[in-house]
Structure formats: structure tokens, C-alpha cells
Length: 244
Image (cartoon, rainbow, N blue to C red; front, top):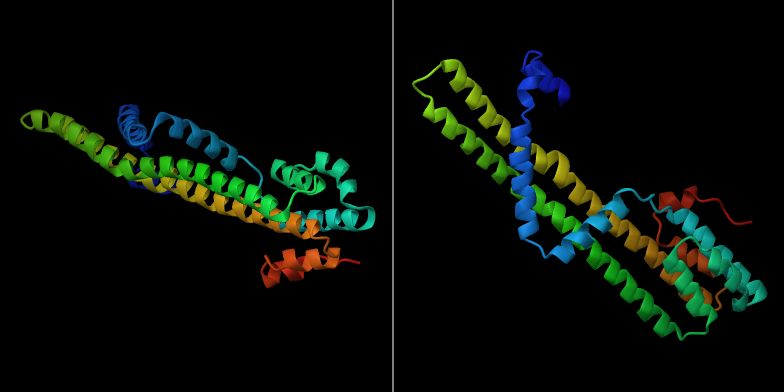
């Protein structure tokens, strides 16, 4: 895209750089997005967006191996033996699930507690996607506002220097361009990525939930593995190393 802009402007790339238009389009879209959501939702959205955008991807294959390892420990040494490994589990959701199992909590209660946590997480993530979705939604409209603002200046100088009129028209078009870029290259893709990351995280937590319930039921580690492997595609299953 950068090359296309450079080529279209015959090397005058500065024609696309208008700080005033950036502030106008960005400020307009941000203000509209802020006005459309409660402040506490915006703060929650930005926090969850930051966490998801910069977090590592969940490797479900590794997660399944980890759950099978816990099942082997529980089968060999008893559920209480999980207490030491539960404290070292990297995922707080997994730690809580294992601790509930160690405490002898009823499986229905374990599932209810963990399911509520998954649903609450998904709901929080929706705020982040919604916020950036609003930025994407309002971007083109704010680009049009910038365009019309510049056109007012252009029409006031119709009888003046043609060079000034041309420059004003260029500024107007750049405002429209910024609005389209905000929607299609910035806010829109971020919103879609947040939605995808949320689904991936919920999927990983569902694997943890089913693994915890299977361990709590005292299932054979091989059964635990087969149950959790059913979450994977045939290609992912084939790529996983076989247990000895």
C-alpha cells in the first residue's frame, strides 16, 4: 500500500501526510466511540484489548499434555497430590479448577463456577471488540466530516488561486482516505482480531474445564487424553506425539 501511495503521488508522499486531518478524523471517531459506551466499559475494553493483543497464543496441544500429566499424578498419587502442582500452574483458571478438585467440591458446582468464569470473560472481551468496532463504524463518517470541512475552505476560494483550490481539494480527499484507513486497516482488523482471540481463549478454557471434570471423576489418563483430543481437528491430532 505504501508503494501504491508513493507511485500514485509520483514520489510526493507528503501529500498524504496531513496531521490536522489525522487529529480531526481520529478525534471525531474516538469521541463518537466514547459517547456510545459507558466510561467503565471503555476502561474495561482497553484493558482487555491490551491483554489479548499482546498475550501469547494458547497452544491447546501443550494444554492437553499438561492436563493428561495432572490426570496421571492424580491417578498415581491421589487427587491431593495435585496441590503442589496446582500452585505452579501458569493459568489462574486452571489453578482454581485444580484447587476446587483438591477441595473435594461437587463436580456440578465446579462446572458451574468455571462456566460462569468463562462466560464472564467472553462478556468482558465483547467490550473490547465493540469499542474498536465503533471506531471502525464511525471512521468513514468522520472522514467525510474532514472532507466537507476542507471543501468549505475550498469553495470560499473558488475565485482565487487555482493552486490553493487544488491544495484544499487534496486535503479534503485525504480526510476521506484517513476515514477509510481507520475502518479497514486499523480499528476494523483490531476488532476482528479481538473477537478471534476471545474465541480461542474461551476454547482453551473449555479444554481446561473438561480436563478438570475428567480428573475429578477419576478417569484413566488415557481416557482424559482421548476426551480432550476430541477438541482438535484430525490434522492436529495426527501432529501430536503419541503417549508412550
